[in-house]
Length: 126
Image (cartoon, rainbow, N blue to C red):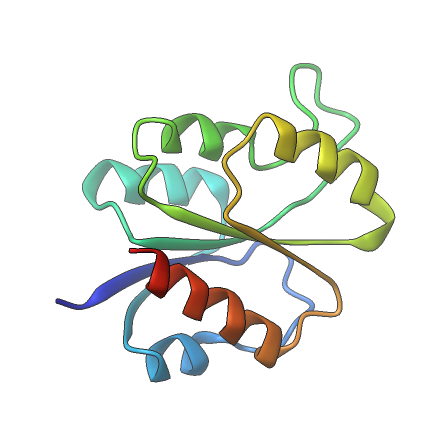
């Protein structure tokens, strides 16, 4: 049975990883916003989600772009969430991780080899 991966690319700043995902046997879907990700998750639940953590101090009720996504994923604990984050936001990201089910985190600069390792662990965890 094939594995499905949802790639949420809001800001980018790393190599195009879709060929890597496909070479590892994933059926890949890609969206460019959290709003589109929520819509996607109403129709389909992937095995893995790869997303970016973007700290946002201007939000009143949340600190990042991922809180709503994580709330949706609470209903689907089998989904492996792999998150890319900026080193300068590490303290806020670690705080986020204490309340979220993040399978693996990767700090920028994102390399294909590190992502491959995280995805391999996600496949082995199933």
